[in-house]
Length: 115
Image (cartoon, rainbow, N blue to C red; front, top):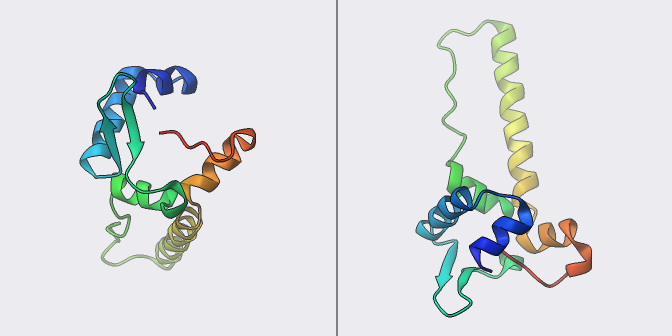
């Protein structure tokens, strides 16, 4: 899909979307197509790629969260709870393919995946 069209349809400023698409291209998640109606496409089929894969590549691992050297019992319990929340988030996002996300966002367009 052309970046300009995607920006217009999703209400994203074109400059910001261009930066995102360039980063996705550097990470090997999308490739640019240079033809008359060029644009970007996924490098892996949407049914084989999860939302989590995109997020973890873009943001990096959240496993480097700093911990206090000598936490109080409350701080330790809060830290453990935050770790559990991160793991639950990771499991949820790793379980959603881009195809499923597209179907969820626009069920009437099932089978048409844009990036």
